Image (cartoon, rainbow, N blue to C red; front, side):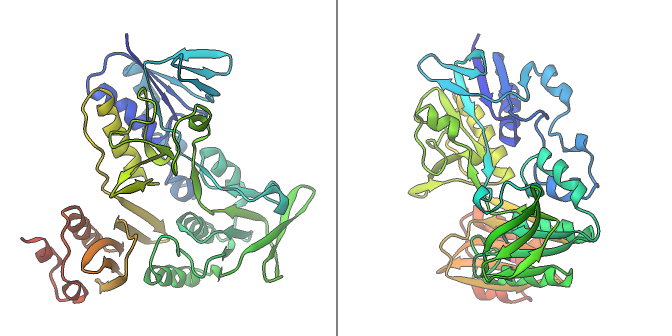
Amino acid sequence: MSHIVVIGAGQAGCSLVAKLRKEGFEGRITLIGAEPAPPYQRPPLSKAYLLGEMTRERLFLRPESFYAEQDIDLRLGTPVTAIDRDARTVALGDEVLAYDQLALTTGSDPRRLPAAIGGDLGGVFTVRTLADIDAMAPHVVEGARALIVGGGYIGLEAAAVCAKKGVRVTVVEMAERILQRVAAKETSDYFRALHARHGVEIREGLGLERLIGVEGKVTGAVLADGNELEVDFVVVGVGITPSTALAESAGLAIDNGIAVDALGRSSDPAIWAAGDCASFPWRGGRLRLESVPNAIDMAECVAANMLGAGTPYAPKPWFWSDQYDVKLQIAGLNTGYDRVITRPGDGQSVSFWYYQGDTLLAVDAINDPRAYMIGKKLIEAGRSPDPQAVADPGTDLKALLRP
């Protein structure tokens, strides 16, 4: 009987094994996760879960009974230590497990501060796993002082939750502005003002020199300008890197993640990859997406291809961020934009439309689900409306969808 082994029990891994069964695969399936918890949602961790608005069980992607009902052997708290491609086996400590096909859905790892500048002190947290948030939660109390290192979406979401809990928050961002790597100045300006209204201090163009600790616990921070802050805890949100160590040690091709072809197959024909850890062909280059929708869609595509579907993966990028009572929804990829069109919405809503020449690339919609949905449909259809029409509040957005 054919045996498919999936390493990585996150969103992509869970989606992949569920799709295998849905597509009628009747062989053995083993899903292996390094964490002790069953596959769970990550986005609510630093928001609803940290705020105490969501229970641990509601984070789970499937009830624990699902895996037994689907005859999926779920191995938790079990890191895979090696892949033997010649023997087609994986090592789980002393145990060796044979596979016919292997899928890597190992996700990504948070970047950490070096120990040399205090990154290993107690009270310094990353925002990636359930264990991270469980460890951080007791520190997020009214009156505490937090330093957020990094003004990307992870850092700003953490700042918003801390501020809502009454924490005094300072954000430091080395780049000239928050969200510089991922968004236009217009979006950065919006969120800077939003955080200022909630009492968060944002310092841009300023790095962290080092953290200060007493008896192994962080108590302060020295910034690059020489200023010193007293802090009770630190949240590090400086990005993530694809989790490729296992693939690298097995000799698989790596190119900003595990390099796969259009079907999701790695340089070894028996090994596939999906989600944050994988880079795939895209418009003459390679692309790696860090998002829940990509984890689900790519994993389901790979599952079908493992069973012979032969369908190239065609991503439809979209993302979101929740901060305070604001929902940012992003459609498309803004890489290469040369102008941004601002469209006012109703009340406090607004959307920013990214163009390269006359081509619409992406839309940032802030509390404007209508602009998001229409922008997403236009981008997926390869259509680019007249920027002047987009900027005119009198234009009926829905009319832009008509042929």
